[in-house]
Image (cartoon, rainbow, N blue to C red; front, side, top):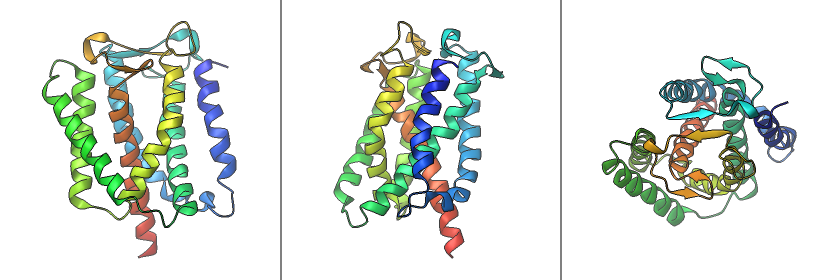
Amino acid sequence: MSLYAVLIIGVFIGPLALSFDKKVAFYKEIRFLILGLIITGAIFLIWDEYFTIKEIWGFNPLYLLGIYLGHLPLEEVLFFIIVPYNCVFVHQVLKAYFPNINLKNISEIFLLSILISALALALFNFDNWYTLSTCCLAFILSLTAILLKPTWLENFSFTFLVCLIPFLFVNGILTGAATSQPIVWYSESHILGWRILTIPLEDIYYNFSLLILVIAFFEWQKGKSLS
């Protein structure tokens, strides 16, 4: 089995097993996640495929199974199923175990930070495709969230901040923190070059967009079932 596959499956085992925890009972809510996985997965996989073709990023065959969907390795496709699943699971765990926590101020500061920094980075990096695309998307989604103020927004901010811990672990390994060569590489011509250890700063905005979209669809579907 490839290192990328071991990593993705490894981080899935815990959330999958704990989905049957009685307090959270996430297994009962998986049906609300399906639409978000399909729509968000389609958006990000098309983006992923295009950037792979353009060599804005790519994948090291040394760490792959060698099975591809288009130009994307199977492990990368699984990433857009397992990572969103894990993050929505964390989202539900935090709501179940911290139901009364007040996150209004933290949420406002967090979203404004994403909004302002994403706009600034996009405006000054028109030639960097990864920087421009991730920051534009993060700006649009954070602005939309601030304007609409959905009821789940405070919980989302908490979820994202907590998910930064496994994010740094997984993305760190993917970008070469534990290997002689990165599993996922980036063209230096299309990123800022600012990194958190080995992780391009742009990945923060990429993961923000992925997570807020999946949770938005999840909460919408769940809300529809209750109305």
